[in-house]
Image 1 (tube, rainbow, N blue to C red):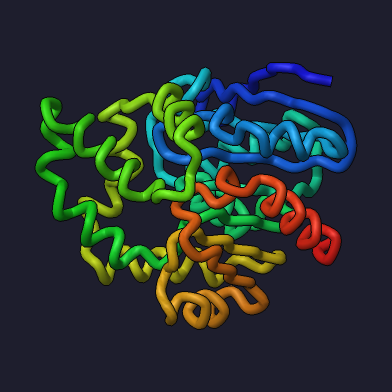
Image 2 (cartoon, rainbow, N blue to C red):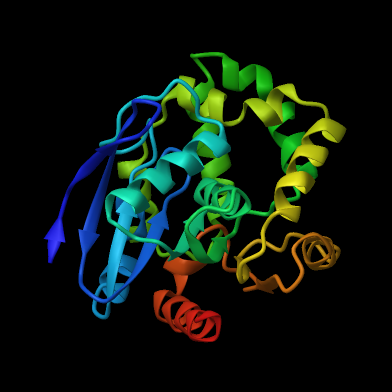
Length: 264
């Protein structure tokens, strides 16, 4: 089964998504400036045994624009898709921005059975500092695309196959308004204010939680996350870069299936 439906959220945003396969459901949420297509071979592998729901976030892919790209609002958009599919609880997997979105969904007591967060640290101090350092260039329409491509290239690392790099580059949609809105908390909040907001959100995550990082979030991160979300698991796949799931999709699928088996 493969279908491409859409739903209109309570906020009036049209969210497109794709449903592939049959079986226990799982929702996949992509990263910034990408779309559901970014999951590539992960979708193919999971849909062999599962009903895979691949979401295009608002302002991305085939979905419509939104009034807000705050992660809480986007979490509500993903919840609307889950509701449209008639699901009470589902495993959710998010990469990069999608990892933050599915974390916010779990924290809001959304219809989530478990979370897999792929390479999106919830502790954002260092990333906030790096984004603020290029804030003026991000706001400049002339330099915006070059800055974003530099960020993506540096995060991808050397382990990602060149063909996958090219595929991701081709599907990215660098919409300056969307990026600046998504990154507004990073650009406009103080370090303390952002940290407080993130910690309050993370404390409300009570479902099984697995974080897989191809970029090491630092030696203190696992302790930080565990203190706020007891039972959370942090794994570092050293040297895999920002797309560990695409560097070794077979390993990734095996790991999430193991995690879901325990979560169920």
